[in-house]
Length: 128
Image (cartoon, rainbow, N blue to C red; front, side, top):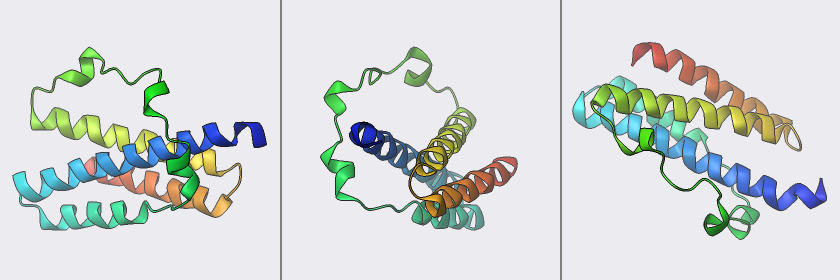
């Protein structure tokens, strides 16, 4: 595991960012476009659960070597708020799953937290 550790920190860092960004986008859509206080608050609370602080996350962040940092055509355009919602709920769910799996390697409690976040997102998806 030691030789894989820096890459694992990169994976966790990228997916923590992806999860928070997806949640924030959904939260702001509910807050500013739909004036949905209940759902915006629920998304905000979920976003605040996405906390993991470890100095290694920033230490091993390496945007320049990200082999897929280029935006794909499907990511470059959205045609409606509904498409924004779908893209971001899926982004958040996928990131939560990656985090759940990664933390199984060294922190089962954190793995369980991200599993619960993922299930909460499945439930929220029905409401969106």
